[in-house]
Image 1 (spheres, rainbow, N blue to C red):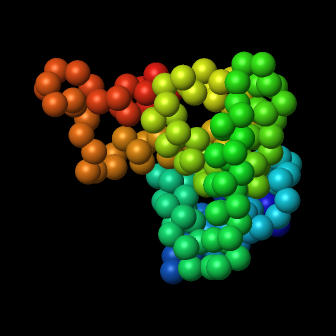
Image 2 (cartoon, rainbow, N blue to C red; image 1 turned 30 degrees about the horizontal axis):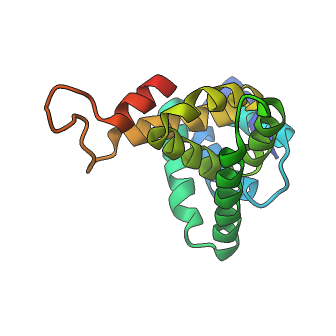
Length: 190
């Protein structure tokens, strides 16, 4: 499906656009938002699938990609099967992060990446939340991220931007001079 979408995008660039017809990007957005991204959480971990989806997503501007990621998160809350997959991924990620250390970094880093291949939004959001809370986790997590795909790096950028823009959290400590701990950790991580 991803290869067909890429070919469709390429062929639509060559032909002239007619007015009143949906643009090729709209068709691609619809296919990604309604089918490909949600299904990613329901298939076994496969980095090749991530790379194929990224091949299609990379054709779109970042604004459209980030909107699709936001819709993906919101739409998945209504499907019980996807919710169960998310919850399982969240618990597995927390279990792995508790065991992550310099000694077992290579093995557990690959396991974290494998979890992220199947459910990137949930796994990466959980990791970023843990990094905001625990400064000592930054270096092992950064080392573990060398096994991620381009799609997962793009989703990670979206999550970090979203966490920075999220309201309701103080950015400065009570003294008014120093940055809050979560912001310092997130800045060190990024």
